[in-house]
Length: 370
Image (cartoon, rainbow, N blue to C red; front, side, top):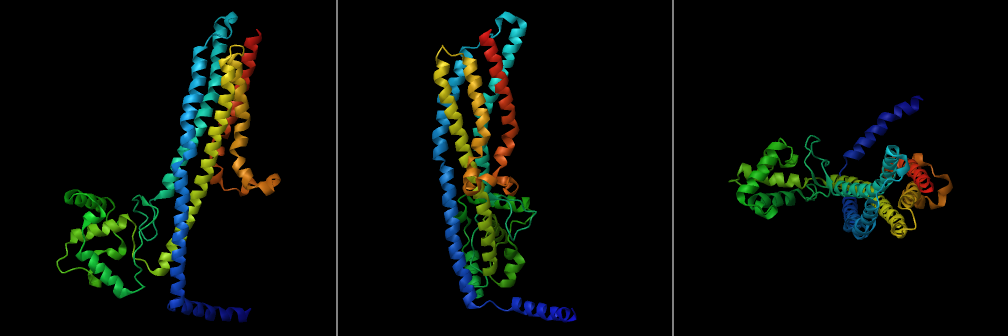
C-alpha cells in the first residue's frame, strides 16, 4: 500500500511533463489530416440533411393528402349531414351530435398527426443548422448563428504568418465585402449587435487591447471599424484557435450534427408513414362513401377505427426495422427518448381515438338498424 502511494506523485509529475511538452510535427500532421477527414464527414452529413430538406416525398404527398383525400371526405360528410335518430326527437339530435363528435375526432387526429410530424421535422432542421452556443464564447451571449463555424488560420501553426494575415485584414477591411449593406446600414447593424450582446460577440482574441499588444493594427486604425470587423468574425463564430482546439471543436461539431441528423431522419420517415397510412385509409373509404348503398357514418366510423388501431404500430415500424435481428426482445428503456418522442406525444390521443371511433361505430350501427 505504501509503495503504491509513494509512486503517485511521480506518475502525476510525469503526466504533467508529458502534457506540457510541445506537439511534434508528426502529431501536428496527424491533426491536420484529421481536420481534412472531418470536413469530408461534415460535408456528407449536410448533404444527407439537404436530401430531407428537399422533402420530395412529403412535397408530393401533402397536396394529394389535402386536395384528394381529406377535402373529399369532409365534403361528403357535410353534404349528407342529417339527424341519425329522428324517432328520438331532441334526444336523437343529442345522439347525432355525439356521433359526429366521436367520428370527427379521429378524422381531425388523422389530419393533425402528419402535420405535427412536419412541424417536428421543420423544428429539427432549424436545430440542425442553427445554434446559440459555440465553444469559446460566453454562455451569456445567446446570439443565433449557423452551426458550422468559420475556420481561421490556427495561431500556433505559424505565429508570424498569423500576424501578417491579421495585419492585412485590418489594413484592407471593407465591411461591404462581408456584408453587402450600405455604409450607414452595416454600421448600425454591427453597432446594435455589439450593444445588445454587451460586447460578448467580439472574440476574446480580437479584443482591442490584445490586438494592440500583438502589433497588428495599422497606425491610423479606427476603433469602431475594428470592432465592427471583429463583430463580423463573432457572428460567424470565427475564433483564433490553436490546432488542438480546432480538432476539439471539430469533434464536438461532428457529435452535434450526428445527434440532430439521426432524429431528423427518423422523424422524416415516421411523418412519411403517417401521411401514407392516412391516405391509404382515406382512399379506401372514398368509394364506399360515394356509394349510396353504404351508410356514410358507418363507413367513417369503421375506417377510422381501423386507422386508430394501427397508427401506433405503424409509427413504430422504423424502430422495429432498426431492431430487425432483435425484434422479439426490444428493450425500450435503452432507446433514446429523442427517437421516440413523436409516438410518445401522440399515444394518449390515439388511445382516445380508438374509444371514440368504437363508440361512433356502435351508435351508427344502432341508428342504421333502428
